[in-house]
Image 1 (cartoon, rainbow, N blue to C red):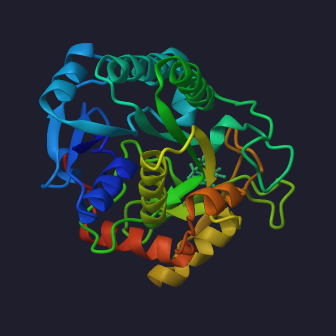
Image 2: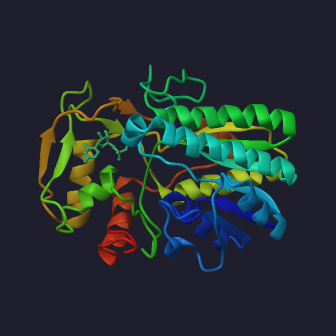
Length: 330
Ligand code: UDP
């Protein structure tokens, strides 16, 4: 039996595929390569190029392979773009979930691990954020993921599909040997943008706002290593295999770092001065997002290991080895 990883050519998906293969799982990847990279897919995984929204593409995978469980990473995830093009997000993300649940029901596959986000909470009323706190997304991306969670809940009850939804906070880092890593076009995430400065690809890092009600005025986020995240996904698969009921878990380190602190950590890791310039706030950024991951610890037995310097160092290792990323996009 195999695990189907949808979006297994993307940043987070490809690291999860790697962790699954390392554990000895048989892995099948479905990815439309719109944002993913063919080279990121582990050579031992069987690759299908296809679109989740196509029933024919899904039927092909489900009928050719013996799929026991699905991990779903295939979604658009740029907050700013989602505000400008909300329907693109509802079409791809919500449409993809609809098609997946229908496909799983058609082929009697009943276990699903889903990649959700802290963006479902919107501006938090308190930190650390717990799973049952209010969910008021402030952008279509977060709204699309919240709708996807609710679709799983309703369809799961009706069709007997059991699921785990993992709400990630900020994810960074790369595989230890640096052969896969983060490569987005355009790049909008803080860690890879900071590292473009020592790589000589930008003159400075912009700090989006220093007037937030935080300890140094810049935004505070909870950064998690992508391989700690992969470990949580594998634990979620095991939880479902052992008969676990539907579950939502936050995933974060539980410690917040400001943008200034992240820049300082990158200076330490790279030995580069990394000039920074304070600019205006970026629309839609909450001041602080920090996770309570107590539920993941208790229910899944998950314990993240890497701190921010290890996250940044592994990302740096990848970028130094691949200054142009996978080199398949201009
Ligand atoms: N950020 C920044 N400069 C940049 C990119 C991001 O100051 O060039 C800030 C951003 O405002 C946020 C934090 O860094 O507070 C993390 O942003 P990212 O886009 O990596 O993740 P998000 O928290 O939006 O999911």
